[in-house]
Length: 338
Ligand code: ATP
Ligand code: MG
Ligand code: FE
Image (cartoon, rainbow, N blue to C red; front, side):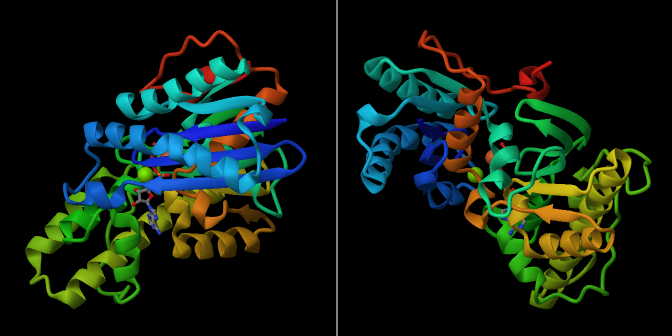
């Protein structure tokens, strides 16, 4: 069975083909980062318009790369939410129109489920059950994953996401958008001992996070000091340390609490090399193992949507009614199998 996946929830148009039993056949991505960077963040209307222009050519591209004809596609998965309403509608309408023409089922996928399952595309892959640390631009959650569709929220951020903390701090330091990669690059030149930023909720005794205070702390530092190149690097270093410290501590605590040994890291912040090193070391020492998606599948992509779609299809969740709505706000718990 071949599933076509379409992701268009934010500023990346991603398309991929996944075949059960064979794996990923092809994937293609267009990122709008350059277009939005001028504005310092994603402009929703521009995002939607760009998805409109990109999605069909990307579908053609993956079909030709995989040497698969449209008629060989068995189902179409698309990101149904959460995300930008207009952007989601582009993927949803193309998916449903194509599927209607082909008389095949569609499957609306929760974007976070895509992120969550993306490490299963790698080799070696984790097996169920595992704990997932989902760290993206909009979310920071620890989840217990027992199976496809069986997710239990263990803890989450009460305010900003970890990716947002990276992005907002980067902005204060005059770095471009998105700030995560830029900030961590600059941090490599920084002195980790010069500044010490707070670790919010480190000892809160639960698995929740709070990152909104960090940008205020960064702002204060930029006001207190002459912000030359070295100081900027030192602040970047302290910021990254604080975020990673909290993520690693709570991830360890989640493993301890659940008694599980496998941690899966998903979402854009999972591309951070220092976070990867820290987690692998800390958790390896305790006999656990950490799994990451391929770097290219950490941030938004079509592969994770095609893959999640294929797994959902195997649970007979495809539909052929071609009515669709998108869910800009959508709690992952709502689509869990009870
Ligand atoms: P969501 O999935 O919650 O809707 P999103 O799709 O925008 O949000 P992703 O694409 O998964 O999020 O990740 C983007 C985030 O990852 C941005 O905040 C970006 O700064 C961050 N990020 C990407 N690479 C790195 C890195 N190397 N270090 C730290 N952060 C990073
Ligand atoms: Mg993005
Ligand atoms: Fe995402």
